[in-house]
Image 1 (cartoon, rainbow, N blue to C red):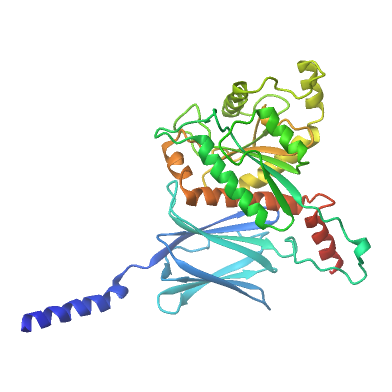
Image 2 (image 1 turned 30 degrees about the vertical axis):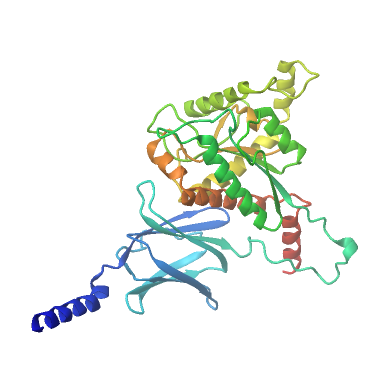
Length: 400
């Protein structure tokens, strides 16, 4: 009995001591990216954390409390010039927690989320800081505005095109993963997110497993009077080591890289499975129709490049990038003369590591969220004149 009692005491004391001997999650490093309208701050962590954020005014501050975390790195290497962040402070808070304080130059709106380990990177806490002056605010209608003066406030129409489908599986991974299934899931998640956002409407080129010719995909975008067209893919590359996300736009000339040329040839070749014509100008000679089409593309390509750059920036930090610039090539699916259009390679299903992530719901959701953020940022800077977002911004200025 004495030995059993002693053993119980030892077990009890070990259980009580355990919480204090477990190593806390380490905040190892911080990285920062900036764009015209957003600052992204990423904290690299040694493990998962629970956190909460809140803001204070006079002066403006953003506080991040991380439970069970300690700081092992420092933020002195960050270049904060020309950002919303004036300085970063940190210290112990509570029992084993860390508080990080961002001293701000002006008010910001915060979007924060955690990322699980992927592509050789560990746990991360991502903070996106958008200037409150640039972000859309709740609608405030001036008193003098009457119902017959109301803005049309139409929704921005986004057409999302999951690549391939039906008899065209697209690229196939080493374990049988099919591109058409992965991109349909990502497209559906993106459409679901867009539907939740006031001021947006979304149309899917396909919402199930069936084949749609490339030119028909362009026609669908034009029929819906789309403000933008995004084609989602997860292709194969000539090299199995190629990995990461890419964004492509149409090129009036040659391709910007050998990979871009390869991708365009591969995607355009898929149309031969079902299409009888690559051009929907039936009363024209195909060569003449192509010239007419390309002549009207200048302004649309410029808008597409701006859109693509914004989306690519949003994908950074969520996944690795195959190219850090928007690539261009002669993709048939992007040849809409009046609709800004991009093709997003969410990763290469031919790459074992990319393929492993692309089939998971968590990564598909993260990619969809990144695509949404890029689209939203683009239209906040370039709202169609008769859209709800433009109406919001007009009335926001009227209240200043």
